[in-house]
Length: 398
Image 1 (cartoon, rainbow, N blue to C red):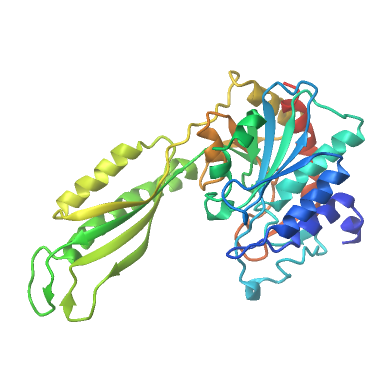
Image 2: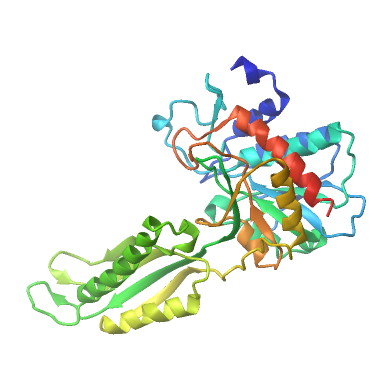
């Protein structure tokens, strides 16, 4: 523990980790003040935007390049974290405690406060080495609301002139910890598709053998959805990456007024994550066909239907990828390039036709994001700063 106690970068990370920027009622004020101090310590300007409302600030810390007219580099992370069940933690979730193995515990340790301060640590390292400017401008951004879908943060920010003025050429964001020796790199992600199906049918007394009831339609649809789900899960067992598998979960069933009345409708809600390459329109047409086969008079309502974001290219036609890969190759890192199984702020950037990669420099580490006792290794955290020091210097000098 003493090995890391006096390390400046560890102390900065711990300070950030201790801020309880947790849903549902977040006050980002402490995050903003912390980031103001960090920007001042690096002698960098900071801008605070409110693309959605005053409760959700979006922070931009800028390191101006020697050729600022070139498309810039955006290094993004989010400030918000998910709730905790404190009774299940062995360490205080906002205590940023380090145990004897060098594990730093805290909500947001992996998802994703570590990455935000690693960006800053990498810039600090470059400046200490006498590098006062890179070729391209680097913007370090800290967004709100990512854990709730980004609707109060990046989703609105990309619509603003302030975002357009940043002139982004490459965007970097989060991935996930690898439990093996490689590192995940996300170049795409599944598409969110959440729907409600309102199954209308014959209502009446519970003692009557009615036909065309909502329950019969529900049964047919559940069979169709669960069969499809089962087929997709089999792909995982066959080694298909999770991002290339469509995930279907039934999350809500609502209906009925009392036990002896057959209801006039039953509602089903499905949370669906469409695999990369799945055509949304064709998928929805399949569901509508199932609805007709079930007996019809079923209403499909979109709860969330996001456009499909393009895949970011990872070959020699993308000079930023070439620079990124050269950095990781020089460091001897093995990359596992996959589509993200979840959704991040990167999807809003990809929809702007800007290449976006998710890369969190964590390996040989148990994935504990959103879990009890979320942690990162102190040595792994410091290694991540060194990794991003190399990456930033490469991609910002393209």
